[in-house]
Image (tube, rainbow, N blue to C red; front, side, top):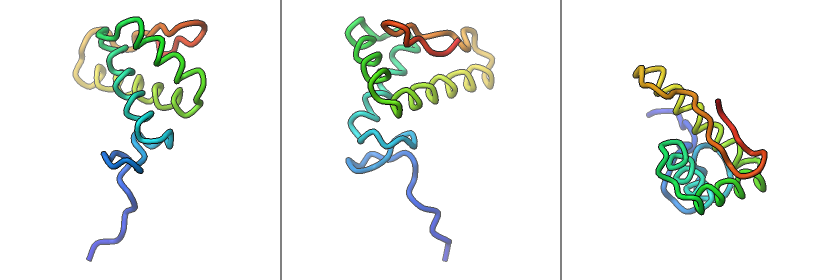
Length: 98
C-alpha cells in the first residue's frame, strides 16, 4: 500500500488546480494556452490583450504565467535552444520575463 501523496497539481477535471494555482480550472487553462501562445509567437493581438487582462487582474494568473516563463527558460537551458529568456510584451506595464 502506497502512502497518499495528495492530488496531482495538473489535472483535467473541472474542479482541479492546474499549474498549482487556484484560479478556477477554465482560467488556469486559459492562462496556460495564452501563455504558451505568447511565448512561441502564435498569439494574436486579442490573445495578448486577454492574457494581459488576466495577468493584471489576477495575482495568481501572473504567478502562473511567470511559472510558464520559468519552465520555458528551463527547457531552453536543458535542450540548448536559442531564444531562452525572451520577454513577452503584454499591454501596458505588464511585461514579464527577459
